[in-house]
Length: 300
Image 1 (cartoon, rainbow, N blue to C red):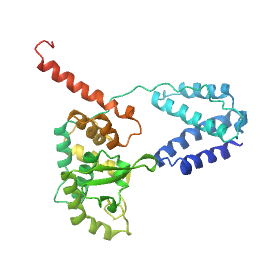
Image 2: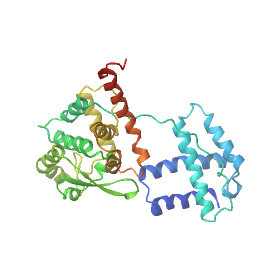
Image 3: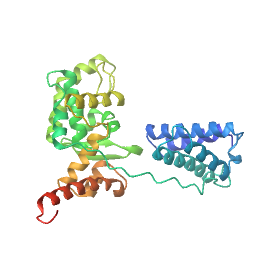
Image 4: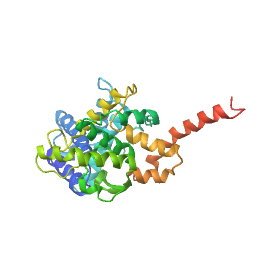
C-alpha cells in the first residue's frame, strides 16, 4: 500500500476504533509524517518496501540528528513506527511486520514535580476575587487541585457534569469516564463562578454547554488555561516551574502523604494501571526518609 494511504488508514483506526485523544493522535501524526518523509527521500514509496534494515537506518538517523533528541522523544517515535507497522500486518495489508525486533529505549523515569501545600494555597489565592475573570480562574485552579483532573479534562467539562453535587464526572483518555469527589472549597469556588460570572460570559458568545468560558464567551482553550496557571504562579511568587500538570502531580502526592491508598489514587487519576500511579509513591518515600532522618535518635 502507498505510504500516504497506509498512514491515513492507521490514523482513522486510532481515531475511530481506539478513540484516542486528539493530543495522542497529533503526536502519532507528527512522528509518522516525519517517518514517511524520510522513507520517500530514501526512495521508499510503498509499505511493502520497508524492511527491518530500513527501519534501523531511520532510527539511527534520528538518534544522530542535531540537536540530539531526548530519549523520551526517541522512544515515542519508535513506539509510533512499531504501532503503525503492527497495524498494517494485523489488517493483512502487509504479510510481515518489519518492526518486530524494534525495542524502544526505556525512558528514564522522572519523579513528578509537586508543589508544597503552602505553595498550592498561595497559587489558589492568587486570582482576584473582585475581578470576574479572577473568580473564573480561581474556580479552575481549585477544581484542578481538588480533583486531580488533567487540564484537557477540566476545560472539557460541561455544566451538567456538576449535577451530582459533591462529585464530578470527568472524561479522560480514550473517552473513559470517572467520578471524583470535588471538595467543599472547589465546589464553593465553582458555584461562585457559576452564579456571579458565567452568565455574563455566556451572553457574549454563542450558546455553549462548557463550564469554563473565555472572556468573549467561547469555551476556554487549553492554551488559555495554561496561561491562567502561569499567571497565578507568578503572582504567588512560586519560582519553581509550574506546568499544566503540576496541580495534578500535587493532588496525587498530597493524597499519598496524607495516607491515601495508592489504588484509590489510581482510580481518582484515571490511570489504567497502578504501575503508572506508583511513581508518586517515590515522592512520599522521600518525605518519610526526611521525617525519619530528623526524628529517629540513631538515624544519623
